[in-house]
Image (cartoon, rainbow, N blue to C red):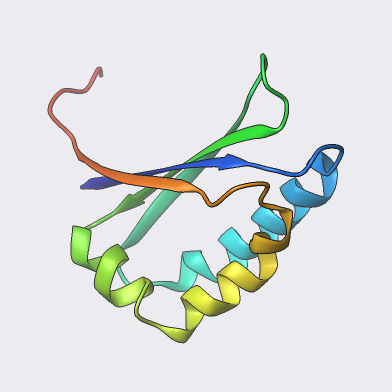
Length: 100
């Protein structure tokens, strides 16, 4: 399993609208992608304009080639992109250890 970690900084005072857009985009667009295994969306406490999205993919290519190379990626960005204060930082990780 691959973890995609996306760090978002959004426009001030847009939290409720951003969260609604994220939920819409995640459930109607990303959840339909090949290799999608789940997600977690985290909201910053010290910085309320910051969100960290964790998406779990079967393979790296499911995200980087399959999803990002598809029309669904454009659809996803159209839903959530208007809220970005800066471009998101996205990285991928391999699982090395896990609690029960």
